[in-house]
Length: 422
Image (tube, rainbow, N blue to C red; front, top):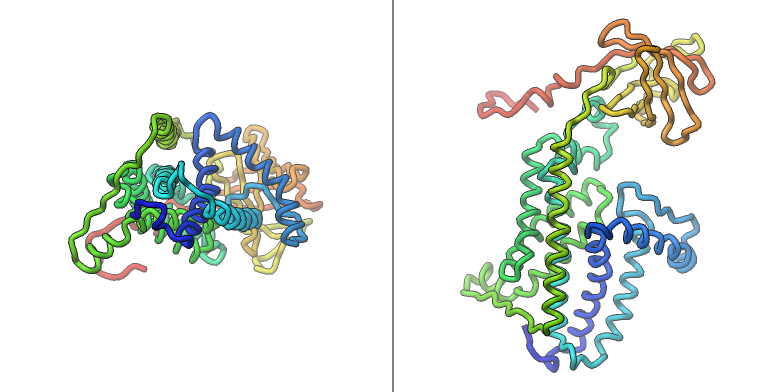
């Protein structure tokens, strides 16, 4: 690392200023959103700010005609996220030009570089540990249930296929999570930060490839985390090349920055906040897993429609029938999902009254759509529903699918495999 400001070229000043501003615009809000007690308050404030800005920065400035949705839908690759990243790049570019040409006598550029690395490695550590812990506890990709086991490959999205693959093996998901936890933990200390950056870069490179190849909606942030890890590792680029490529002895020297008393106090407070934020995730997950699980309901599982009668007319099995049901899936909570013949899914809230023999389905998309159906149980694995649906009298006969004994769930691990079972 070059110690004097005079040896920093204008190009290097611009590059440092640009990366510093762009990384901080991204990582600092994410860090605040991870802090207990202020996360909900700041999250609402942050989202409200962008709701107000999006018609100006997105529709007016970029010529986007359609309204830009800000509803949280399990994706951080929405239109508004790309608009946000565009303006981050603009702000970082303009700010870099201004910042790079200003004199920095009171705060030398090497000190700025050191503090940028401190912020980046703590922010990246928080993200790596957070995502790692939810994999270790098996909550990011939940185990396969009736909804996953009863659908066909063709009905799966690419992201759903990846989620099922990861959720099938708790050990493999935990293994990948531990790799993220190890990388994040190493980033918390300056002496192990380079090793943590290398581990995190390797882990995140794999995550980025999966997200791009399987269309998972976190491509922006996973790419950002990979860039942060590469940025941290690049500090020791020359000695790392000497060690791993040229086979020469190398020293990874990273002297601590010279700090005033106030800055030392600020760093201690930052570390304390980071550690509290990091510990919150595993504590919450441990409490959630220790909590008693709800007992399965009598109708939980996947039900195949064997007969569908609408206004007295039998609808035979046909992939082109948009009215006929194919499956009714009931997870272990008051929710139901109807699969149509083309694989389309409709979610409902479900109220079951076995004593009265009724099942009430309330559409999630339109709560005004309510189906009050009479329920019969001729046998434990048979179900008959009767009542008005979409303006017609419908009778649906269903049979429970035995998803628990599917080959995927019963094959298990085997050391000796005489014949391929694929």
